[in-house]
Image (cartoon, rainbow, N blue to C red):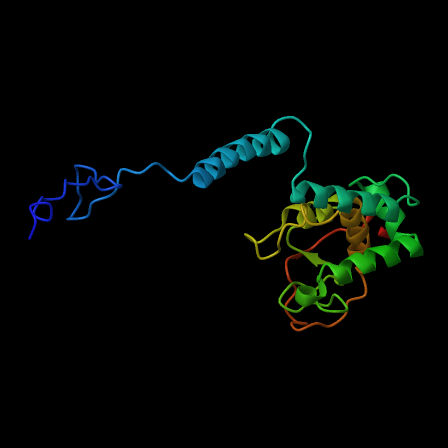
Length: 206
Protein backbone atom coordinates (compact mmCIF):
# COMPACT_ATOMS: atom_id res chain seq x y z
CA UNK A 1 0.00 0.00 0.00
CA UNK A 2 1.25 3.45 -0.73
CA UNK A 3 2.07 5.92 1.95
CA UNK A 4 -0.56 8.13 0.41
CA UNK A 5 -3.30 5.82 1.59
CA UNK A 6 -1.90 5.65 5.13
CA UNK A 7 -2.10 9.39 5.70
CA UNK A 8 -4.77 10.04 8.33
CA UNK A 9 -7.58 12.32 7.25
CA UNK A 10 -7.65 15.67 9.02
CA UNK A 11 -10.28 16.08 11.72
CA UNK A 12 -13.40 17.75 10.38
CA UNK A 13 -15.33 20.03 12.63
CA UNK A 14 -19.04 19.15 12.65
CA UNK A 15 -21.26 21.74 11.05
CA UNK A 16 -23.49 21.99 14.15
CA UNK A 17 -21.69 22.70 17.38
CA UNK A 18 -23.05 21.44 20.70
CA UNK A 19 -23.34 23.90 23.54
CA UNK A 20 -21.15 23.24 26.54
CA UNK A 21 -24.04 22.81 28.97
CA UNK A 22 -26.49 19.95 29.28
CA UNK A 23 -29.62 19.23 31.29
CA UNK A 24 -30.32 15.69 32.47
CA UNK A 25 -28.04 14.39 29.78
CA UNK A 26 -29.75 16.43 27.08
CA UNK A 27 -27.63 18.74 24.93
CA UNK A 28 -28.59 21.25 22.28
CA UNK A 29 -26.96 22.60 19.18
CA UNK A 30 -25.67 26.15 19.06
CA UNK A 31 -27.88 27.11 16.12
CA UNK A 32 -29.71 30.40 15.59
CA UNK A 33 -33.49 30.54 15.76
CA UNK A 34 -35.08 29.92 12.34
CA UNK A 35 -35.73 33.18 10.54
CA UNK A 36 -39.42 32.35 9.99
CA UNK A 37 -39.85 31.87 13.75
CA UNK A 38 -38.11 35.17 14.51
CA UNK A 39 -40.32 37.02 12.03
CA UNK A 40 -43.44 35.38 13.44
CA UNK A 41 -42.45 36.38 16.96
CA UNK A 42 -41.79 39.98 15.89
CA UNK A 43 -45.10 40.17 14.01
CA UNK A 44 -46.97 38.83 17.04
CA UNK A 45 -45.54 41.65 19.15
CA UNK A 46 -46.55 44.25 16.56
CA UNK A 47 -50.04 42.73 16.35
CA UNK A 48 -50.37 42.77 20.14
CA UNK A 49 -49.50 46.46 20.30
CA UNK A 50 -51.97 47.30 17.52
CA UNK A 51 -54.67 45.21 19.21
CA UNK A 52 -54.08 46.95 22.54
CA UNK A 53 -54.30 50.40 20.98
CA UNK A 54 -57.35 49.56 18.85
CA UNK A 55 -59.51 47.96 21.54
CA UNK A 56 -58.27 49.40 24.83
CA UNK A 57 -57.00 52.91 24.11
CA UNK A 58 -59.54 55.53 23.15
CA UNK A 59 -62.83 54.82 21.39
CA UNK A 60 -61.47 53.50 18.11
CA UNK A 61 -62.55 49.87 18.37
CA UNK A 62 -65.44 48.12 20.07
CA UNK A 63 -65.56 44.64 21.55
CA UNK A 64 -68.24 42.14 20.57
CA UNK A 65 -69.95 42.80 23.89
CA UNK A 66 -70.03 46.55 23.24
CA UNK A 67 -71.38 45.93 19.75
CA UNK A 68 -74.06 43.65 21.20
CA UNK A 69 -75.07 46.26 23.79
CA UNK A 70 -75.23 48.93 21.10
CA UNK A 71 -77.36 46.71 18.86
CA UNK A 72 -79.73 45.90 21.73
CA UNK A 73 -80.09 49.58 22.60
CA UNK A 74 -80.76 50.51 18.97
CA UNK A 75 -83.36 47.76 18.71
CA UNK A 76 -85.03 48.90 21.93
CA UNK A 77 -85.04 52.52 20.72
CA UNK A 78 -86.82 51.47 17.52
CA UNK A 79 -89.22 49.19 19.37
CA UNK A 80 -90.22 51.70 22.02
CA UNK A 81 -89.91 54.91 20.00
CA UNK A 82 -93.65 55.59 20.08
CA UNK A 83 -94.43 55.02 23.74
CA UNK A 84 -93.01 58.26 25.06
CA UNK A 85 -91.00 58.88 28.17
CA UNK A 86 -91.38 56.24 30.90
CA UNK A 87 -89.83 56.61 34.32
CA UNK A 88 -89.67 54.12 37.22
CA UNK A 89 -92.35 56.00 39.13
CA UNK A 90 -96.03 55.62 39.94
CA UNK A 91 -97.38 57.92 37.16
CA UNK A 92 -95.54 55.97 34.45
CA UNK A 93 -96.64 52.63 35.87
CA UNK A 94 -100.24 53.82 36.08
CA UNK A 95 -99.95 54.94 32.46
CA UNK A 96 -98.92 51.42 31.47
CA UNK A 97 -101.67 49.85 33.58
CA UNK A 98 -104.35 51.93 31.85
CA UNK A 99 -103.11 51.56 28.28
CA UNK A 100 -104.06 48.26 26.55
CA UNK A 101 -101.26 48.59 24.00
CA UNK A 102 -98.61 49.16 26.66
CA UNK A 103 -100.02 46.30 28.73
CA UNK A 104 -99.72 44.01 25.71
CA UNK A 105 -96.08 45.05 25.34
CA UNK A 106 -95.54 44.38 29.05
CA UNK A 107 -97.04 40.92 28.69
CA UNK A 108 -94.69 40.24 25.76
CA UNK A 109 -91.75 41.08 28.02
CA UNK A 110 -93.22 38.88 30.79
CA UNK A 111 -93.39 35.94 28.37
CA UNK A 112 -90.05 36.59 26.65
CA UNK A 113 -88.16 36.96 29.93
CA UNK A 114 -89.44 33.56 31.08
CA UNK A 115 -91.22 35.07 34.08
CA UNK A 116 -93.86 32.37 33.67
CA UNK A 117 -91.31 29.67 34.47
CA UNK A 118 -91.41 30.77 38.12
CA UNK A 119 -94.66 32.70 38.45
CA UNK A 120 -96.79 30.56 36.14
CA UNK A 121 -98.32 31.35 32.73
CA UNK A 122 -101.19 33.23 34.40
CA UNK A 123 -98.91 34.67 37.13
CA UNK A 124 -100.74 32.70 39.84
CA UNK A 125 -97.45 31.32 41.15
CA UNK A 126 -95.32 28.21 40.78
CA UNK A 127 -91.98 28.26 42.55
CA UNK A 128 -92.36 32.03 42.58
CA UNK A 129 -95.13 33.89 44.41
CA UNK A 130 -98.63 34.59 43.16
CA UNK A 131 -98.71 37.97 41.42
CA UNK A 132 -102.50 38.23 41.22
CA UNK A 133 -103.37 38.64 44.91
CA UNK A 134 -102.84 41.43 47.45
CA UNK A 135 -99.93 39.83 49.32
CA UNK A 136 -96.35 40.98 48.74
CA UNK A 137 -93.07 40.50 50.53
CA UNK A 138 -90.75 43.03 48.88
CA UNK A 139 -93.33 45.44 47.46
CA UNK A 140 -95.38 48.16 49.15
CA UNK A 141 -95.62 50.75 46.37
CA UNK A 142 -95.69 50.61 42.58
CA UNK A 143 -92.04 51.70 42.13
CA UNK A 144 -91.02 48.82 44.41
CA UNK A 145 -91.98 46.42 41.61
CA UNK A 146 -89.45 48.10 39.32
CA UNK A 147 -86.80 47.85 42.04
CA UNK A 148 -87.42 44.11 42.57
CA UNK A 149 -87.22 43.42 38.84
CA UNK A 150 -84.02 45.44 38.50
CA UNK A 151 -82.18 44.23 41.59
CA UNK A 152 -83.77 40.83 42.26
CA UNK A 153 -84.86 39.50 45.63
CA UNK A 154 -84.52 36.55 47.96
CA UNK A 155 -80.72 36.39 47.70
CA UNK A 156 -80.86 35.59 44.01
CA UNK A 157 -83.98 33.42 43.99
CA UNK A 158 -85.57 36.23 42.02
CA UNK A 159 -82.77 37.15 39.59
CA UNK A 160 -81.83 40.73 38.81
CA UNK A 161 -82.88 41.87 35.34
CA UNK A 162 -81.25 45.29 35.32
CA UNK A 163 -78.54 44.23 32.89
CA UNK A 164 -80.75 41.91 30.84
CA UNK A 165 -83.70 44.13 29.98
CA UNK A 166 -83.98 47.63 28.60
CA UNK A 167 -85.19 50.18 31.21
CA UNK A 168 -88.43 50.65 29.29
CA UNK A 169 -88.96 46.90 29.16
CA UNK A 170 -88.63 46.78 32.94
CA UNK A 171 -91.23 49.54 33.38
CA UNK A 172 -93.59 47.87 30.91
CA UNK A 173 -93.41 44.48 32.60
CA UNK A 174 -93.69 46.12 36.03
CA UNK A 175 -96.87 47.86 34.91
CA UNK A 176 -98.20 44.59 33.53
CA UNK A 177 -97.45 42.78 36.80
CA UNK A 178 -99.13 45.54 38.79
CA UNK A 179 -102.22 45.27 36.59
CA UNK A 180 -102.62 41.59 37.49
CA UNK A 181 -103.34 42.40 41.11
CA UNK A 182 -106.90 41.75 42.21
CA UNK A 183 -107.56 38.74 39.99
CA UNK A 184 -106.83 36.45 42.94
CA UNK A 185 -106.18 33.39 40.80
CA UNK A 186 -105.48 30.14 42.59
CA UNK A 187 -101.93 28.95 42.15
CA UNK A 188 -99.93 26.06 43.55
CA UNK A 189 -100.33 27.30 47.12
CA UNK A 190 -103.78 28.97 47.20
CA UNK A 191 -104.08 28.83 50.99
CA UNK A 192 -100.60 30.10 51.76
CA UNK A 193 -100.30 33.81 50.81
CA UNK A 194 -96.75 34.95 50.21
CA UNK A 195 -95.90 38.04 52.25
CA UNK A 196 -98.27 40.57 53.77
CA UNK A 197 -101.34 42.31 52.43
CA UNK A 198 -100.54 45.82 51.24
CA UNK A 199 -102.59 48.93 50.50
CA UNK A 200 -104.28 49.24 47.09
CA UNK A 201 -102.48 50.93 44.21
CA UNK A 202 -103.20 54.67 43.93
CA UNK A 203 -105.96 54.28 41.31
CA UNK A 204 -107.45 51.30 43.14
CA UNK A 205 -108.12 53.03 46.45
CA UNK A 206 -111.68 52.50 47.73
